[in-house]
Length: 296
View (cartoon, helix red, strand yellow):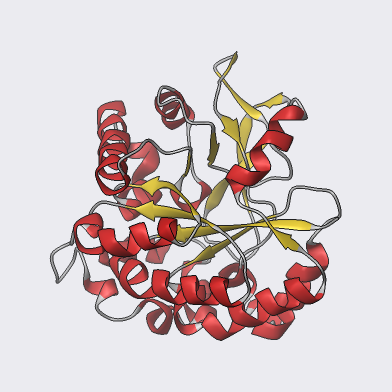
C-alpha cells in the first residue's frame, strides 16, 4: 500500500494568515490530514536578500517567480518594514489547523536567521532560538509539541544536541530515505529523525523546463510502495499562487490510491522497525541553493 506524509512548513506571516486557511480548505476538500510546522518568531524574510551570492539562488528566484510567490510586503519584512512576531498575529490560524484535525509542531523561531547564519550562530543564540520557539508553541497550543522540523533541512551538531533535551518524539532536520537516530560526536541521540524523502515543488518547478503538471507527475511516480514517503510543501507556495497545482496533486494522490498520513500517525510503525543510528552529512541537491543536511 502506498502512503504519503504531507509536511507543511509555515515560514512567514503571510503564509500563516493566508496560506494556512487555503491549505485547510484544500485538505478538507480531499479528506486528507497533514502535519503543520510553524515559524513563531520574527518574519525577517527581507534579509534573505543576502542569499543573492549563493550558488543557484538567482536561478531559483527566476524560474519560480519568487516575488509573485512570496509577495512584495513579505520581501520587505526585516529590511524596510519591521519584522512582525508571527505567532502574535497568526495564533488563530495556527490553532485552526489543529482544530481541523491536523498535526501541529515546531518549525522554528527566526526562520531566515537560522537558515542563513546557522553555522555562525553561538550555542547561546541557538539555545534561545529553541527556547523561544517552544515557549511560543506552548502559549499558542497549551501543550508540548510531539515533533519539530528545522528550516531548510539544515542542522549541525549543536542544534541536534540542543533539540535532544526537549524530549521530542521525532524531528525532521534533513533529507534522506528512512528514519534513523542521529549520531553526534560518537553518541546516538534519542530524537528520531524523519527525513523528507521527496523533492519539493519549488525545487523542480522550471528546472529543465518542468511545468507544474510535469512536477506533479514526477512526484507521483516517486511515491514508493510500503516505504516512507514524506512530501514537504509551504503555505507560501502551495497555499498561495500555486494552490491549483497542489489541488491537482492531491487529486492525483486520491486517484492513485495513495493514503495521506501524518507523521504522528506513522510513528508507531516507524519506531517498531528499530531504526538504525547514522551520522548526518551535507550535500547539495538539484533545484535548491546551498546545502541541506543529509541522512548518512
